[in-house]
Image 1 (cartoon, rainbow, N blue to C red):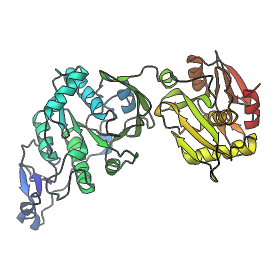
Image 2: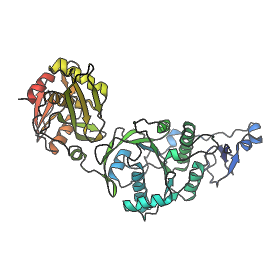
Image 3: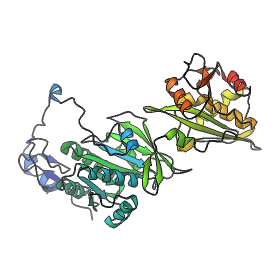
Image 4: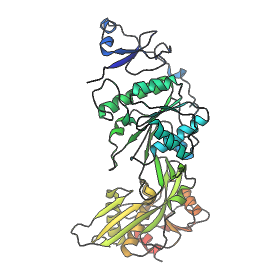
Length: 450
């Protein structure tokens, strides 16, 4: 049986909205929960043709201060958010099932609550007992967080507002439903309507709202993609395979930089911020292995040193395989073509596999030279010189082009122990690292084997 459609009406002025909001957007009066049915909503008040004009605000009268952010005291989480949570914002945190979204949300809720912020945690996927057991494992079992074990979104938001919450966490958006829609929880119609109601709830009441959403094992965004255009910030946990390192990336952020990343390590006490992410990403670097090259990329507001790995083996297949993890396969094909034509290293009879350390997703073209060096090293099965990094963008002509913020990248490589670096001609010198200028791919390969 379909649930009865419900809406809400201000007791003072009669303003109607499909989602319950405590403060009326028209007359600013506070309301208790006042539900009405679809039949009532289409009754005499609507048939009379009475339309209440919306309120207007002059742009110059709107305060221009950014407002006070709420710090979660989780450094890497605050970094990705742009400095903390903005009051009245709606944040989506997505990722694979089991990657650590709920752990991070519970830790953030506990830190906020311990500092006096009223936090409501809508646990649609777990019972209060399960949440308490997880909180005890994380060492935050006594945190004054208000749990709301409710699957109805309207009822959960009304309970959160009734509790005086300043921050609401919904874990997860696929586990709650909007009454009045005859579809399953997590379906497209439910997610779209839930997103619209959450926007109205957070903006009208100035309540910060965080929702989690699952992606499929194949990496498809699926349901949460329907919410990306509605929310203020979209954060995604990236690949967790290969170790305990987790990477949280900002895909969209109306209050901070996009492409900012936070690096976490999963421990027995939950997710811990990694203070030195470059060292963590290079922890397994083997300087004596072929196919391993190190570079530095700019992620958001900081440089990160990371390792590119490649493996090339002879094959009898008519079409050799090309497998890429952490970078686009099309980019791997392009660099292999440049390596063959401009560098004289042909991998046409080899299967080639390339990956990026730590589950990072490599988008920075400044890592092109390092990828080529790793591929050439794998094809010849000869390791690259010790303590030598590569930095530069590679053109189709084989020329090595300059990269932006080269000095910051070189300083990060020097800080983690690299003594030499192949760079494009004209790169400014940096203390602590010897620069080896190269003009093209052939020069770079010759310099690596001198």
